[in-house]
Length: 109
Image (tube, rainbow, N blue to C red; front, side, top):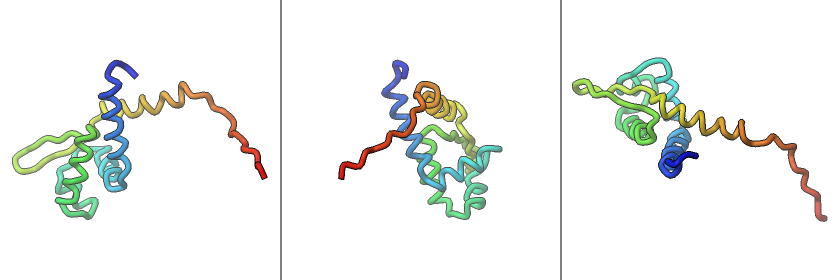
């Protein structure tokens, strides 16, 4: 990685942690096509706003989503820049890792 390896590593850790929850994955899927209000996300996911708020906080801290406040409503959208960071990180495994045949372990009995 570049000179910001520590920062990137921390960002990657929080991003992958955020992606480890099915509800948060559903949120990202819903935001794939449009910005949505918390009330719309809550209705689509059939969860209360307080539970959703926790998941949105995790996604926001991981920089996977961004929000805009309009009056009393918060609107969420994907943060494409962070998704590109994750994509580039994972692509390094494909690009720079040799594809090796599986290692066969010998039975020592």
